[in-house]
Image (cartoon, rainbow, N blue to C red; front, side, top):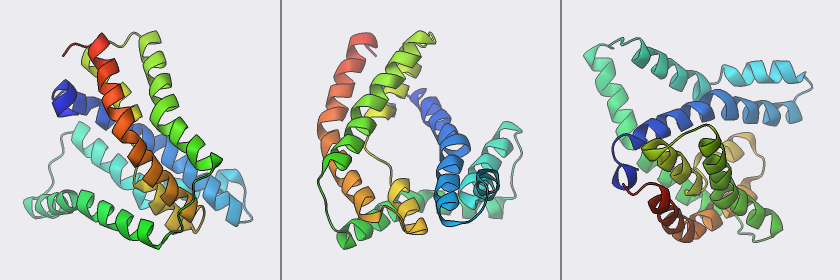
Length: 194
C-alpha cells in the first residue's frame, strides 16, 4: 500500500482491519456457531464477540487511541508476535492448501469474482458517493482487489466447515490477483495520479 499510494494508505488498512474485526468477523463467527449449536443467534453473536480474534484487536485499538503505553517487556513480546504473524499465517496457509483437495467450480469462481472484482467496484462506488478522494479512496479501492485473506481458511479449519472450498478460493483468488492488482493500480492511476 505504501508503494502504491504513500504512507497515508495505511489509514485505509487500519480502518479496513477494524471493520473486519468489529463487524465482519463477529458476524461470521456467530453464523458458524449458530449452525452447530442449539442456541439463539443473539447468544451465538455474544460468544463470537468475546473470542480473542475479536477482543484483542479492539483492545489494541483502544489502547492506541487512548495513548496508553504498555510496559517495555509487554511491548517487546507483542512486537515479536507481530513480526512473525505474517510469516506464520503464510506457513499455515501453505500447509492448509497442501492437505486440501483442490476444486474449481462455479462457487469458487463466484467467490473470486466477488472478492477480487465486485468488492473493489463497490468500495470505489461507495467511496465516490461518500466524497472520498485521493489517497484514501485509492487505498480503499486497492484493498478490494487483493486476494482472499488467510483468515478465511483459518476460520474454516477452526470451525471444521468449508475447508476445501476456502483453500481453493484462496488459491484461485491469489492467482487472479496477478490480474486484479495491476488492473487496480491502472484504475487508481486514472483518478489518483500519485
